[in-house]
Image 1: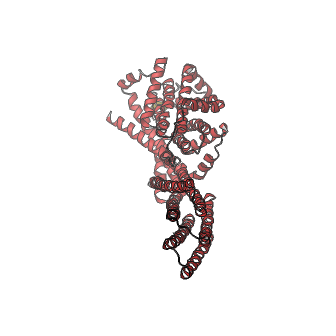
Image 2: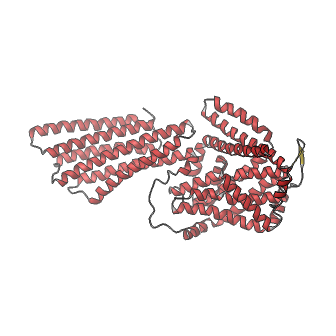
Amino acid sequence: MFEMTTTLIGGLGIFLLGMKYMSQGLQSIAGASLRRLIGAVTNNRVLATLVGFLVTVLVQSSSVTTVMTVGFVNGGLMSLTQAIGVIMGANVGTTITGWILVLKIGKYGLPMLGVSAFVYLFTKREKVRYTALAVMGVGMVFFGLQLMKDACKFLKDLPEFQEWFLHFTADTYIGLYQCMLVGCILTVLVQSSSATLGITISLAATGLIPFDTAAALVLGENIGTTVTALLASLGTTTNARRAAYFHVLFNITGVIWVSTIFFWYVEFIPWLIDVDVTKAVMIDGQPTYPDCVKAIAATHSVFNILNTLVFLPFAGQMATLLTYIVKDKPQEIVHLRSLDIRILETPVLAIEQSRGEVIKMGVMCDEMIQILYRILSQEIPEPADVEKLFHHEEELDRMQDEITSYITHLLAMDLPQEVISKGRRQLRMADEYESISDYLQRIAKFRLKLNKQGRAFDETHNNSLLDVLNMVEKQLSHVTISYQQEKTDIVSATVKSGNEIKNKVKTLSREHLEYLSAEKVDPYINVSYTATLNALRRVRDHVINLAEALAGEK
């Protein structure tokens, strides 16, 4: 009994770890493809569904895809209608796992695991390492499944378990709902419908449960898997919660209508794929039911495909209904929602989301320069401009803190070198943008202090500062646009424009000293002018640092 229990638990653990490694390896190999797929999502429901299907096939987890989708909606990167299509596609994509488990390669699981583990540990080429990781995951999945099947063979020989399983047979509607409840609870506990599907297949393959009971468990598993998305929606925006609720609505509605025709459905599936679910085959002296395993995979696939076909024409109406049911909050606190910890499960996409926030920091710095230009141009600065500039500086401080925290969490994971390099680059760029905002705010404070004292620069000095500010704005804008367009060969051009700014500041400083010798200048005016020139020169330095970080230098 103890041996059987430890084998079952060990098999489940190896299976779950295999799913994680397979997903991690596939994501690293297909990083660029994942980015392109997510970028291809439009309001075309068919295309969105196809994207959801393909992404789930690549990451081998509908939970990851759904949680990721909730994160994208939370960050405003995906509309509710787009998310509905992706979620439906994810439900179809997850059925591929069932067919993978149908493959008769359980005995090859351990050799696959061993060989790929050696390749993963001793090769230096990243592409080969992560391919080996994915293969190692596949090997662990099959080895774990084989262990669970072996444990279930012991169960079959125990009369206590046989008697217990008799209470969970889907030969009546009460039995059907009991089995569905068991499948749902089991999926909630292990947080993986693929794992519970593996357990169901193990039980059915050994003949411990009949096909109709396995089919009922599969329906329950489809309800249990929605809990992951619900948990992911806690603390998110209203639209993200609507996306999670759609996942629940989609699966529960599907289970309800299939359960009403359940006894016809479990006869239809074996007929559809032409198998005999009661046929046993002797393998290693033990009876197994391979046709029953195929029928379980088909049950899962047909359920999700039919459900998607039923819901697909009404995606727009479903979005409207969810908008009506789940009301908008009066005021939602704005955070960096695209930096959603839920997306960390897919590092190649997570690093793209943080990149988007770093770009926003660059755009905000550029806006600060434009606002500062207006403040310096006005005799009495507009209070709205002053308030906006100071608000931007506070916002950039917060953005840098959140980006740093997010990327630090990301870099703690096992990542491809490319993702690590991008993460470090983003950390440095976020720091440089935040430093630029500090200097821009400092320049504004110099001007506001002079105004408060009733002092002001003469027209010549003021125009000279505006000229330098304009040069800095062009330099910064060039770097930010280059980052948006993923151009890295910009260091020489940025250094050249930086030298022009440096020479301009030197010239103005020399002219100012000559002016001081010839004219009597208010000390406060002198200090403010010199400090402003120095601050602009420091901004120029930070822009050059940005260009070097973008190019991967220093």
